[in-house]
Image (cartoon, rainbow, N blue to C red):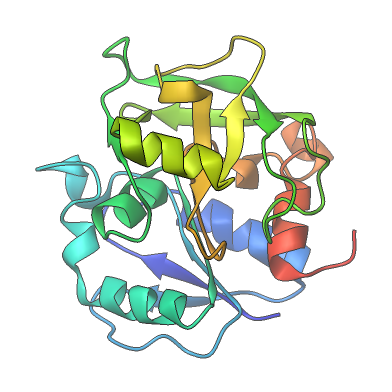
Length: 222
């Protein structure tokens, strides 16, 4: 399957994401710059983490208004698989492709460590290589990862199974409501998550817990 990585000024996890997609997908993804208005025919589009535009205004707010994000939205509307990690999650929220918002961590501090994630829904195209309730390890590195949604929105995403991952075993690092670490849209083809699965895909990283997410999204054999 073909993949693409979106490049924006300030993103600093693009090389990690490109390496993960190349190793697991068997071919390097194409890269698409912020001003591009067209994305090649691919099966998976990924927006990596970092600090797009220095996180000025709000995290992801400026990036969400770049021409390339209109192209991402068009692809998502056609059913293409889209994933945003960390700043990528913030950008997807700001672009209106996912519900809710990400606020400053409850501690008001940048947090960089490993957490445990529970697979809340194993029926998505991103989590199908995991078991429901499975607990995996995953690194995080963010300052604004505190997921928030109004009461009605929260009830809807919980009721419709849109929560893909939760922080498990008391490892919630940011105060996210309901321990939410990652969600999908109602159609199930767009995922946003704060943790970095691309940084735990091989033993050299200290484990492979993130690998199954990419295998599922890329449709690769385990």
